Amino acid sequence: MAFALITGPTAGIGRAFADKLALEGYDLVLVARDEARLKETAAELTALHGVACEVIAADLTEPDQLAVVEERFRTGPIEVLVNNAGFGQKKPFWANPIEVEEKQFDLLTRVVLRLTHAAVLPMIERGSGAVVNVSSVAGFMQRGSYSAHKSWVTNFSAGLAIELHSKGVAVMALCPGFVHTEFHERMKMDKTIIPSFLWLDAADLVDAAWTDLMQGKSISIPSRRYKLIVAAIRYIPRTLIARISTIGLDGRRRA
Image (cartoon, rainbow, N blue to C red):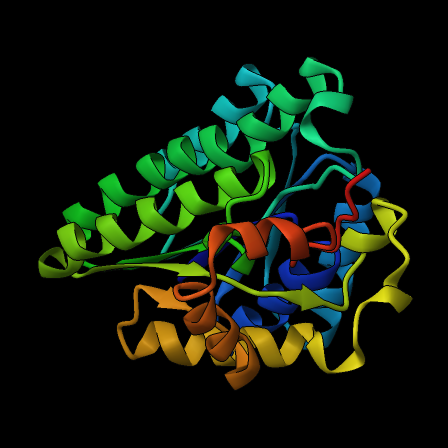
């Protein structure tokens, strides 16, 4: 029995991964804070795909609750880990309480570090497994703490992919741009300011990411439009990036 563990699986990219992995034949371990919504999602996935679903209700920024999820990697084999949980800030760094910034830092970096570590140790012993860390195109830009966190995720994943390739373990950073999810609604972002051609569908995104993972890619940038954007960023002066980043690729408008 092959299991995949997904954080933030109740909507958006996480839910699309849950559907995709269920179709690929994996039973699921679903991790999020809202237990009622987790159970509802688990029931839907079982009814749609006939897979078994475990639920772990946990706030991953709380060390004792994170430890419960880490323990799950030791109690039974997890073949695929998808680190998807996250949130963004509408206000710039200096306008947020430092406690909120620390919580975002923990969820986007520390949690990814710890769960990846917990996952790859047994994967190395088995000689198989895969980790997908959901990053962002924003990580290729220099524009605040969210961008910095995602840059770390991408570089961490790409470096680890090189180290673990010979051990049969795949690691990939998925770097989407704007995706139709609840992410932007939770930030109360005006989605109309984003050109329609920049929006991606979560299911299409995950299908492309899974293909990239199977092909051994360490970084997956969805769609030709975002590949071109990332390529162009390398040649755009930082002063211009700073000017256009008042509306960034995570949908945040700076004050």
